[in-house]
Image (cartoon, rainbow, N blue to C red):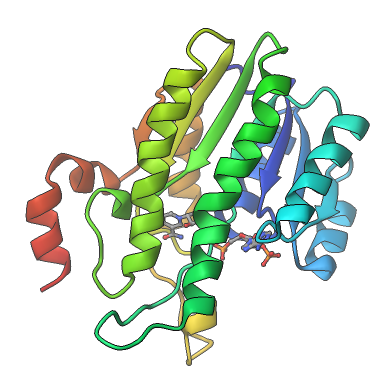
Length: 244
Ligand SMILES: NC(=O)c1ccc[n+]([C@@H]2O[C@H](COP(=O)([O-])OP(=O)(O)OC[C@H]3O[C@@H](n4cnc5c(N)ncnc54)[C@H](OP(=O)(O)O)[C@@H]3O)[C@@H](O)[C@H]2O)c1
């Protein structure tokens, strides 16, 4: 797709992959709107990037997703790209009774919210000439790491959902992308790290961003990035390697 001149709504733009996309698209001459829960970060980003628009929103909450949609199409009817990026990552031990609040939260944020937002925006985006929904899945959609079973299941579901959404929108101008990141060094999973100086690990964000931007620019609709390609190509083998 054309990577300039769009109006792009990114969920979860306050850190990591969403922030990297926001800064890059802003630099490339797009109108960028980001949402997230952390007000201080949103305010800082609005100051730091002239013209970037922010909106406080907890996408885990149904009514806040509906509010976000209504606010967005009323105030920014030129929106032609939705990036479903916001996500959380929790550890779940399935051998003991699980904390259902955590399970619900992870599924609502990572799966229900992208389903809901895509469905809210689909008919609006279909009225545009060059529009897109970009879902951020994961290499773990193809081969799970077993200590994060719910997270990986939400990402496998995003992969499946994106295929169906692409099919349902095939007679419209809306391009439907799946970007599957490898492990990228962001704040992901910070809730579960007891040592707060520990990083997520993975490749530097700029390496991810370069390849992901190329995938978007050249219409690679299903785009595993970096080592996510290996996870997609050899899922059983990689499952054994990762879960030794
Ligand atoms: N990093 C990796 O290794 C990796 C690999 C594969 C896939 N991914 C995927 O990439 C996406 C971005 O993750 P990241 O690595 O960039 O992690 P991150 O640095 O933790 O960023 C997550 C973003 O999601 C937002 N968010 C989380 N829950 C939200 C909620 N309920 N409402 C609104 N915003 C919410 C956060 O904003 P607030 O906290 O301000 O709300 C933050 O901006 C996720 O979908 C993740 O699963 C990441």
